[in-house]
Image 1 (cartoon, rainbow, N blue to C red):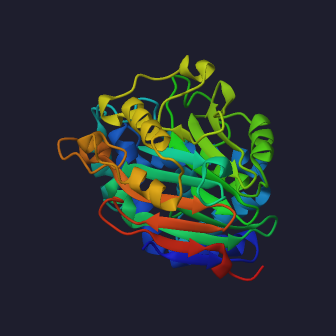
Image 2: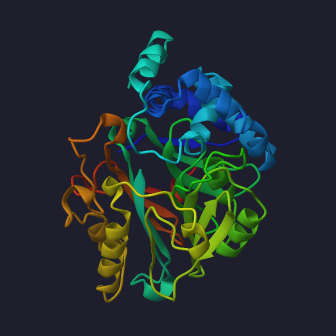
Length: 378
């Protein structure tokens, strides 16, 4: 299981505890993204400069988020701009990733190592409303598909927000949040999207936004928050609450598009479902398998009489399409910097405040449970 880190207190103290407890994991995040950015033609010094440009946008979400980032840097012994680069990694990555390596990629990677930087996606998300659940509870689930090297940087944060509810998030060390749920019974998943306008403007980065969304009570509140923001890159946030509401929040530099279902389970992979979003969609690399994964996920969901935690685990373990399946094993024919696999899998019971986590390719391991009830004092 990934390390579970309990934090409370001020934002800076929460960040400091995160940084101290996950110091080696933060170093792994730095190593992974330094190498990935080099693959895309961006050295680590440039990535830090680009990350620093998002400082004001993160502070605009709530000043304590920036204080938490500063605490992570202090606790882990990294520079603040390194932690900013991690939290803006989606926005820094060019919209062509994963594509062909940059001609100078290897040279930049060597330069990173000479400068002291250590050497060392995609996702399928499903929301099940109460009406379709065998448990009478809204469920959220996701396979997080990304670089296998980053698995060793993953942590679970269980924390009390000084300005909000207790929450749990599976995230990358050094980042404020990713997949998670809170004590209000609200949860979020994340799918990376790519549009032609990504990276043109410095606006709200998605990982700090996910952390801010984990203060919300409901899908309606999340939509209202996201509607007031501008975005520098494209992502989808699949969110749900205990009332049974669920929605895809497709974020891009063109704005927010909300995609809902029709009462059944709601699925999303790595392409836009909204008409407006699809207009700016970058061409999908064949290795992403986004369209067939969505079709397969919907088919598996619709074939169930009702869906509970066990059914979601079976769906997330589906390997019917080989290396392009919902449950993905790494393709050895691809470069390491573009070799996507299911680094973790999560099933969340929102009302119960439970997160079931598979800490590897989910067909290879058992799910383990982390609960809000075991959290630190408020």
